[in-house]
Image 1 (cartoon, one colour):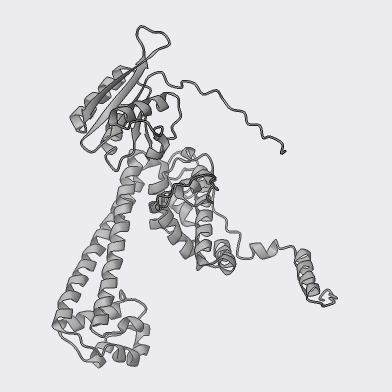
Image 2 (spheres, rainbow, N blue to C red):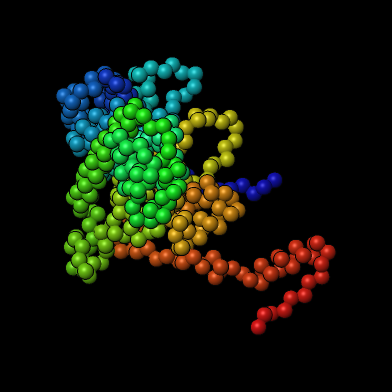
Length: 444
């Protein structure tokens, strides 16, 4: 029989005396407020009522909860319907926490109604049994809105370029097989010329610029197709849409930069301790610190900050942040498994870190070498996740300590720490297992 493990635990009692919970729906919410019983010293009393999900009604609810001295308000994260409750109650000065539905499941076999759900949430709240979700402060929420909108528009622009390539393939134009991408100025000029009515492959290939001029013959061969008037109409629509998206993306990039500049916590710290960048700064602005990490540019750094925020006290350790992003190892669960088919963690942050990992893999740095070492043994997908996690851990340390700076260990870090004698012994054992007698001599 194995030795038992001993864990020190606290007796679970009541943490909050005055609590409230809201079972959120689209048009309304059921509120349960639990207070001490006025006649029974050890008793509790619950008040349950329905409140419309309107600004006026929720504001009145906030005033009532504040007047009753409610210490904690719990909301269940139902779609985006929780936002009006969270924002208004938070603005009124109440301590609000948002919890995932999986954290507040009712006991199986019991009736499930909005009233009972609200009462169950309130009881869990007063005992402190709920783990709140991370909701960033208002200034980070604004930054997140700009960053996510820019990401969506960038994805739409990529889809338009893919549709344009499919349209050219339908017209038997194989220019994408010669040019690296359709966004180069040479290819854009060729497409506009075809829309204007030019069909001569030699003339179209003559529009190539700089290094693409050396591919004149290949371009002329690829541009010989059946580009008709209806292809021209559709291509013009796609080019107009791409140009519109470029304008919107540029505007969102500007708004993201302005919003980030308005956040005091993102500024640097001068030598005198005041906020603001200077040549002798104690701490650089947060974008400049994150920009030093391989694969993380200024725009990508702003997007990452929009998801994590700047206050790392919400994540006690780098592992907590990696788990929240969905970049940690899975838990081996015993018993029945409930599989929702949906990935866990912040998908936006995971996507940004994946882009950073791919960019870092192309560099001659420690992270680039880490990617290549893992990709050889475990595959590119696993290597990308591992490097993304490493980048996130680095970012946690940079945000947790404003004076910290990134220092690259270099691509030779692993090789310098390799135990040569141990590696030699392993190779000798492998040769001996094959029936060879090995004698090694130290090289001069």
